Image 1 (cartoon, rainbow, N blue to C red):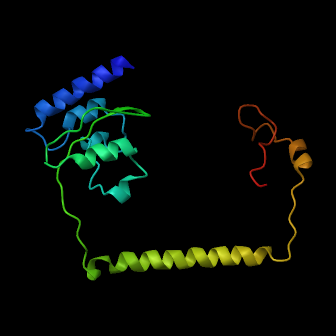
Image 2: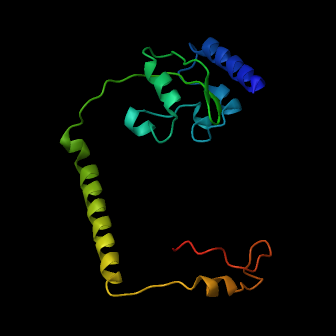
Image 3: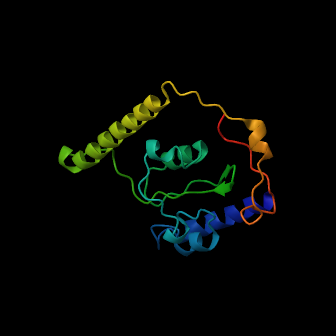
Length: 163
């Protein structure tokens, strides 16, 4: 653990010394980052908002990144579940409201998608009306899969995901 922290600290120091020559982490990220999504982009993860980043980044990372105020600033090394992390602010932009003309198609697509999903759920619900479905678990466990179809020479079916 200490070795990984020392490595991350040294990489951060290298990033600080290279901060003026590159807006992102460049080759440093390509050589050392474990984040496959940004590694070959020099560590650049694009525009990040608090809402859009919650699913991708851990709370400690978000807190540290959103404390940065000046482009070029680098967070301290942060311990996360996957190891260690540090981030760099490339550019900061105040939140703005996009004109309707720019987002109209996206809103239309989102509304149509939600309407389609609702219709699919209703269709599925209607298909089940008056239909009694039961699964014979004992019979399922007795079914043998042909060897040519079995994975890892296991000729039994996995447990049913339907309960």
